[in-house]
Length: 97
Image 1 (spheres, rainbow, N blue to C red):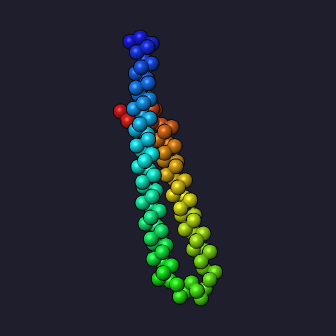
Image 2 (image 1 turned 120 degrees about the horizontal axis):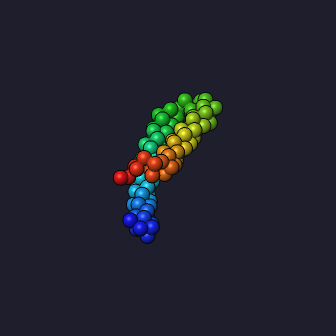
Image 3 (image 1 turned 90 degrees about the horizontal axis):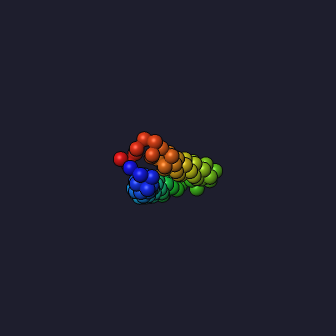
């Protein structure tokens, strides 16, 4: 195969891998949206069920919100790291072949 053939094959592989990486990125984003929506529902449920206790002990609200914020942050970082790892190793492991 000539150099032009290798370049064309490489461009086709890059295009294929790029489109597959974009599809994986969409899946990761959908997963994050699902996680956020379920957790926001749980936060709402807990707040509405514990409203009398939270009104009596108002110091618990910031602690609970800190916990929820940390949970969202850790999930976001985890999903971004998964995408970064896929992007970094997709050619090395022939991930999409």
